[in-house]
Image (tube, rainbow, N blue to C red; front, side, top):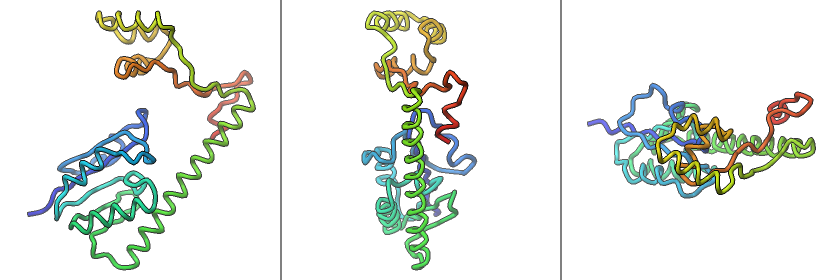
Amino acid sequence: MAGARVGYIRVSSEDQKLERQLKNIPLDKVFEEKVSAKNKERPQLQALLNYVREGDKVIVHSLDRLARNLDDLRSLVKSLTEQGVSVEFIKENLIFTGEDSPMSNLLLSVMGAFAEFERALIRERQLEGIAIAKKKGLYKGRKKVFTQEQIQSLQSRAKNGEKKAKLAKEFGVSRETIYRYLRTGDIYSYENINRRSSGGESINAITS
């Protein structure tokens, strides 16, 4: 009897879409979570590790979706394959079974190092973009957008059934901000960087 095909999907923020990964790939079970790779606490990954059995295959979109760094990647792949669980990475077209050649293990290390390096470059570009935005006066940081009275009013009106779209329009925020507050009690605006300066320059052009 063939083992289960188990998918692991991770994105690092609420804004990213889980469904973009492993699309149209047949799976028997899927573990999904929205958590930064830097976070050691990844409950769905731990649930996957507890779930899989010998003969199963774990399928992940790419190396960086599974692991926090190169050491973490090697440790996870080794732990799974030693249990008789194979691991497949779709983007890199790599499969590890525990019976891999030294060349395959070397390839895992090399590809993992490239993924780690790519993340470091992206982070560096983001920091450079923020630094430039600060110099141009475009970086505003995180700020509260509601007074305590407004928060109480929003709570009451939402509880009484007023539509979220109407509330968002009246309070001048997105519906996602309304939903986020109602879920977590956090009513902060995440507009950290103004999208355009007075001269019409796009901040996307600065950070790209």
